[in-house]
Length: 427
Image (cartoon, rainbow, N blue to C red):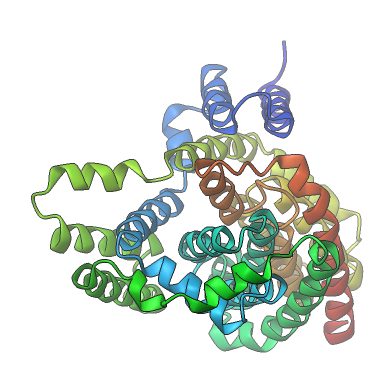
């Protein structure tokens, strides 16, 4: 008779193998894998529901609703044409411009909100120039996770670490923003080398775009004003959510509810249309994934792996920092980084109680590894899954292995850079 721990590992590995193979849609795998964990008695339904991060799901749904209504105004087409004209409709320059915009927004907002706002722009402008959208989407995924590394509010692991250790916004700026910018510039150079020859358009298409009137793309000024007001309110809530004691999902759903209220008070067909455009495949995939990982947490698999790995270093600060950086990166490429970081935080705190006085290298290694590691695979971070889902809805499939062939080596390079940074600055 197999133990619950062994059975949990078997189901988890089988689920990920199916996701990687792409023979079964990842949403089906996530839901059925989660149900298998419950049916086999590995995790109870109540505990499974407890492990679903409804803050992440609420954030996703709220921002999807806001973005879907805003898209009706023509704002994204306006921004696409404006951005293209600023870089004279040059495809490579546009790749860098959109990546930089994504990184900056991801540092100030969360990654998912950022890609929900920028991906429609990307599809619109690449369609205008008739260039392949995939390099732009991959660049934005990578940039969103690099940008999320840079600040306290950019990525959930940073919020968790800051809360547990008492690190403030400026601590993260001082320790992570500089290295994140350097990593971003190196990654952009690599992407230009990789895609430079592919990203070409016709001069007549560039001239056609340059002649376009961006303002004429705005189809509903009244609705746009409402949307911009609600976006301002929502972003303000994001910035102040810590001081107000609010979760990010509350901020997003408040904005979504407010926009629905002032826009479609009794218009049921429009409400149904907006809600039908929510990326439900991504929502249900995340729910299933949270339960799959939750089963590993409940059976002690994640804690056991982390504890055994840390024991290998025998309390040496340098070895422990390097191990945490790489372990976090590799793990975060394949499993959700939130439960992994939640497991490592108390373990690092325990090391401090055992006599290890300088924990700074460990905390910054954990933040860098968990955030940058999300770039390793298509399921490594929430933003990755959302971009892939949005692309699939528009008929542009991003395959798991196709993304990984490019992104995983890039992720490894960024972790090598992070390793050098941690060693030079803290060790």
